[in-house]
Amino acid sequence: MNPSDADRGSLTVIGLGPGDPALLTGEATRALEEAEVLYGYGPYLARVPMREGQRRVESDNRQELERARAAWMDAAAGARVAVVSGGDPGVFGMAAAVCEALETGPESWRGIRLSITPGVTAMLALAARLGAPLGHDFCAISLSDNLKPWDVVEARLRAVASAGFVIALYNPISRHRPWQLGRALVVLGECLAPHTPVALGQAIGRHNESMEITQLAQVRPESANMSTCVIIGTAESRLLARGDLPPLLYTPRSMPSPSTERT
Amino acid sequence: MNPSDADRGSLTVIGLGPGDPALLTGEATRALEEAEVLYGYGPYLARVPMREGQRRVESDNRQELERARAAWMDAAAGARVAVVSGGDPGVFGMAAAVCEALETGPESWRGIRLSITPGVTAMLALAARLGAPLGHDFCAISLSDNLKPWDVVEARLRAVASAGFVIALYNPISRHRPWQLGRALVVLGECLAPHTPVALGQAIGRHNESMEITQLAQVRPESANMSTCVIIGTAESRLLARGDLPPLLYTPRSMPSPSTERT
Image 1 (tube, chains in turn cyan, purple):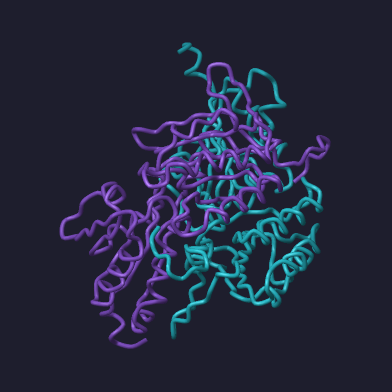
Image 2 (tube, rainbow over the protein chains, first blue to last red):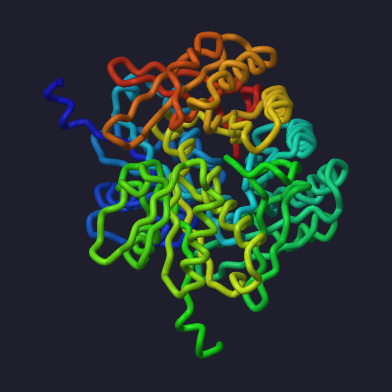
């Protein structure tokens, strides 16, 4: 180890989980404490307790690559830098932008220590509240067509719906992307029965948490927003009534044949 | 609220994460402390610190439904019961078995409080170590054909590989299922280029952690075991060399068009 290594900065990408501090991992908590400077989208930074002497650099949620570059520059200058990301940084979060900034940045950045701290991503937090909707094979798709053509989104929706995957939709709607969720539901309606269970959840674990279980043909896209995660069940998914308690939504582990029971 | 509710037992399904105690959430830690009895597969129970007065009921990893039923019976008898699950309980874990046992059990169980504590699932922990391989749309598939026909597994692999999803394989191989991973790789080889990056990781965050980055045509199925998670990249995934540091594996957020840059 080179003696100058000790002076060198570092970059950590931290998964904040869905928002409830109780869903943060110990590793993430420690990484937040150790950082000298935090980079992130304002609402995510706002979830992190303030610490004396710790700098904060806020940016807009559509400036991921610019944020990642600024964080690398700061680390290259010797700082212990953290980039915060909602949920898990590897799931439509900051980890890919940080890698992309590294690939396109100066060669010298590649010697800077990088660590990534996983977190509980939205679909897992929502699934835990509902029962076990992911149950078996599942996928996660971002409905944002800012970075991929919409045709690709539709082709992917058809592929997974037809193949029996549970589908979690991220980034379903925003001010700049008002029609994509509605169109996705039409596409899914061509592959799945109208009564297929669908759950929408937002701000899971936060004070303004809300959840709704409905059916594919009944979903109102306008009830979703940027922070909504949508879980679309399969032909096997079912609702389990529980009297006064909320119903459970789950997708059995086994395929149709009702006699199988071992895993 | 009925006065007898206070006496009633409860059931909590707890995600232990990938194994490193630092990757446990605060909620999971508290739930483990509050339980009077813990049900689980032996190696998972072994990760939980012993507490005086807390009972433990170990069972084999192929007895998920039996374990879930026993846990509900204990809760019905008034105990604060926890069922532990590796990773996230909703991802090929105990949550679905607990729902299934509830559906097929006595009506009275439906009044028992159930909570599910999410966790960091294996693919997220492995992805964090590698860089950002999940990067964009991705899916998780269990290669176990104990609960679904193998034909379904192959059809799902073809659907997602052809549609450009990153693929995480769970339960790739076991003593009772020795050929499935090899066959899955053949199927994937029909849809993806031989040099598609593949990562295998096991026991992430535990003392015996190991990881390997290779290419689709080079994967040796015998290097995997029951606890291995396999991540198969896409045509866009790439390796980023970093001198003395391990290379990063990542899948860019954007589709081919190299001029797009906003999210």
